Length: 147
Image (spheres, rainbow, N blue to C red):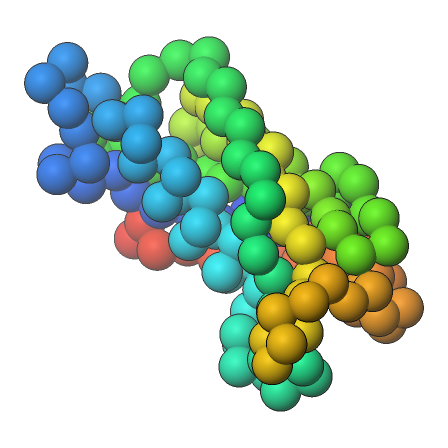
């Protein structure tokens, strides 16, 4: 198993930048969501397979901190790692770095609660899912950047 976390690469599009010619801050929530969906694919195969197990996740907290701007046409890497696994919740950390120079851009922590999609009530994270979360995607790079 690799020591490198799951990584999703993408290219900053022109429409994602603001009047200051940097990625608009609200876009990072979109980036988090896209990266987590790619992570879920590695974890379950696809989102539907998670739902078929009567499992779903709901966001309860998202914290973002920026350290440098990102610009149009740069390639960013979103590196996803589990930070905390509770009984029904988990915190995933997403570190955004510029590719290929590894410049730190931003960092996010997103907290999810696992729920039963039929009842929308909290449900414990199953043991096999818990183990997959700990190791999912280690060393995997998914790129939509075309680099």
